[in-house]
Length: 155
Ligand code: 4NP
Image (tube, rainbow, N blue to C red; front, top):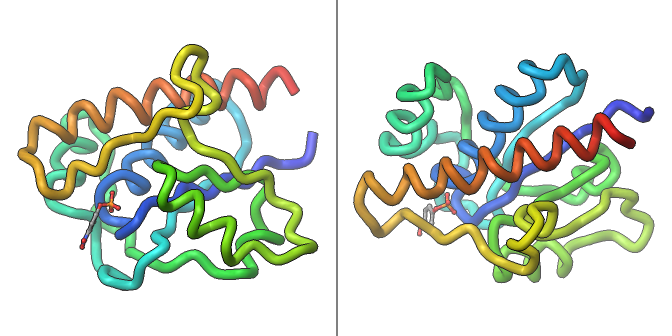
């Protein structure tokens, strides 16, 4: 198997995609899957910043430290460096497709496309909501991480 390299992408790279990256790293570790993981945003608002405090707290509640993560914007090289690029929602998927180079090899899709029964669904943006919404985000990204790791191990 080619070593999987997975990029999780949302808008700001401070709420959803850092949690998706953390959940994937956790589940990959649990299963001994050797994979590279990173996250990025389609926007530049939070480049260089740590994750949102609510994402940090949500990960911390699961025993995962994401305080060292830093926001970055998705770049054209990512389509060559990663095997899979997963968008959290439809707007970000459109923005990713818009900058995808013709020879980009990464497989691009919505993250929830890999979860049976959730195909085509978005992971809602919790940025303007309360901390409790971040638990829903975590539930979504953890479910997706479990489905993704199972799929990669079966490949
Ligand atoms: P994320 O959430 O895309 O899940 O990181 C957001 C973070 C920041 C903003 C919007 C959504 N913002 O408008 O700054």
